[in-house]
Image (tube, rainbow over all chains, first blue to last red; front, side):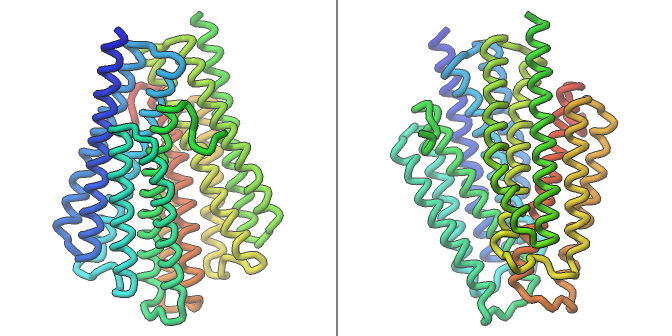
Length: 216
Length: 216
């Protein structure tokens, strides 16, 4: 019984790892589409989102199966509920990549980004994808040191986000309000993507140690 | 056993109803603080957020107790997991009210809103709070007709949101980029608050009927 349970749980963790890989790839493509005003790449991200939604439903079904068939208690129960939350984080990360892709599609063939902020978004994309990939490794390996690294990487995202605002609000900003509205929302999407990656790593820490980081 | 289970579940639903009341009140106050540049009201919302976080933790503990002590299966199990998701929606709604309050505090004693968009935010606040209160009634009464109304109310929020963008992007917008950035984020906070209220109502529909609205 115990062995079957562990096997099902490992299978579940692999499924979440796969989802994390998929949403990181979605954000990588969405960023490339944004930087290059690449409509067909944006469309790919938009089409793929359905698959991420299905993966989320499959994750929830696996959680139900674990809960119903094995009736876990105590720590085991918390592990399964954490995994349900993790699947929700992952679906949301997919939606944020989707929003980036949809912004690219909405403005096509115009590029969304003026030259001044291109580098910022290239970096935000890099940091976001890196966070997603690290979260995937944390899910697969339960490496707690790696989980801690995500908090620092998230500081880098916040720094990039602040720089973005500074650029838009400087007196030299020549592009007016319309691009600023797009950029503000896009910045928010990357920031939230990073927040969810950090939340994922924290959930793994909780699963391994029984405590949320900073909860003592 | 069955009776004790039902009693615990009712208690849980009441707790979520209370949380929903609390986050609606937080958004009502956050909006009033925003409209009147009222720092002390904004501070109240910021202070109250801790209580909402605690209520979320208490909700999760109730869910664990139900799962561990009663080992529900099939529909009962889905009800408990839906309630876990509902608590997450509610905590997020609290955070969105918090973000509105923090924006007010950050700009104080300057008002965040230029006169042109004051009415829009007054309306977005009204619709958001109304959605929150309806979601509370849906949680408490499981009234499916009322649950359906939330989808329409959300259309009203989307319409207000679109109007807001039109105002900022019109050639007559004299306020430049800085207020537009604040307004874009604030608009997003209200829109997401409404989305979560709709998600709550959908979860109740799922609990009652076993199907998500639009899932057939």
